Amino acid sequence: MKNILYCLFLILIIVLALMDHDNRGVAYNPLFHKSGDDNSSNISMPCGLGGSHNHKH
Amino acid sequence: MENFRKSEIPYLLVGIFLSIFLLNFLYQELGLRHVLVFSIGLALGITLYHASFGFTGGWRDFIENNKSNSLRAQIVMLAFAIVLFSLSIGNKSLIYDGNMVGAIAPVSLSVIVGSFIFGFAMQLGGGCGSGTLFTAASGNIKMFITLIFFIIGSLVGTYHFSFWSSLPSLGAISLLDKFNSYENIGMQLSFLVLLYIFFSYLESKRNTQINHLDIFKASNFNLIKGPWPLFLGAILLAILNFFMLHAAGHPWSVTFAFGLWGAKIANIIGINVAQWDFWQLSYPSTALENSVLADPTTVSNLGIILGALIAVNLAGKFSNKSNVNSKLFFAAVIGGFLMGYGARLAFGCNVGALFSGIASGSVHGWVWFLFAFIGSIYGVKARKYFY
Image 1 (spheres, chains in turn orange, green):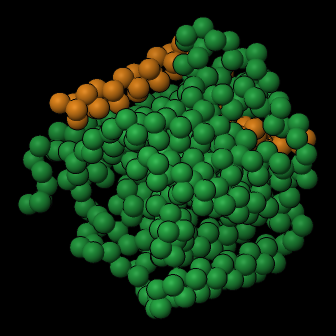
Image 2 (image 1 turned 90 degrees about the vertical axis):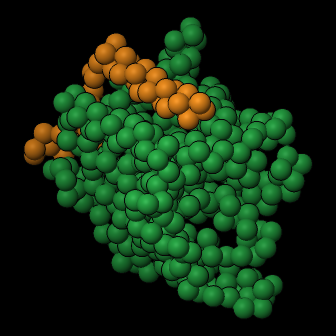
């Protein structure tokens, strides 16, 4: 029973993520890259402050 | 197949079906790089589970018994990753036509405090960032409680962001900025060798002899069902983090997604986190406004969750549950919350700060290692009140 509930909870989390995807959409895809672009300036390391360009204090 | 529990096959199929569904969804909606990040997450989840590769238990084993096999495996993992990363960061990715960045963060008072708190709390919670994720995903109820409070702690950490980020800081110190790749590899590997000798010396001093080959062995090794030797886990984690660097453009990270999930849930219940300073920074504000599935850290975490679910069912251990008494419950609540809070202060957990930070040549990763380890020493003492 616990295992079934666990799997249902897991499915619920994924459903919530899909609903968030439908509601919010993708205004900016952090992994979208056009050939020839040097996007090093907008790649971010989400390590707390959420981006290398934010690490300047 | 004879040792599979038939009762666990449906759960194995659930894990495989959800993985295939998400792979297809991510490909249709977000593109190939999200698919790669998710696939790497799946492989990370399987590796973490089968090799039982966590920092918490290994550090505790050393603190309590001077048993250093897990620490030595972590050193091997770091050494391998340092070589791979030093030759990659700043260069073009093998997967897309753009440069990659390392996990570089400031060396600051907030890192010292945050990593100490994290090291202390992971001994109470029973797992680090990656450990909490893969053990919770494998059906461990206590770790699921830890994960929930990890998310809450991460969110509260973002609320206090302004205060902690105003504390004294030396700024970001990247060894790859100050030295060339080979000098960085030489320096960091030399330090790791010294650490390896130090940990081995302490183990041999207490236990009279040390078996350096123990990390290559696993009782009843089985590639499909596990367990895997620590060495195999260490090498695979380094390679998978290297792949993550090339697919996502940045190294493996776990805890940013926890804060993001908490912020999304807070928004649903009416708390306007978008006004908080942290969520007005460029990347967090974009992540908050965007689909949660656009965030690569979320995608890799989902991969780890489903990878661990597949691995635990391959191992036939999904039904092995332990009871959670009130003491363990409070340990999970306190440990989870403080880990989440500490990770936000320290620019990541054992993965984003220690593993990816050190591999990227960021000095904050070494500071994180030192103070998290000191925190763990106190955490092991506090743990005795709960376990």
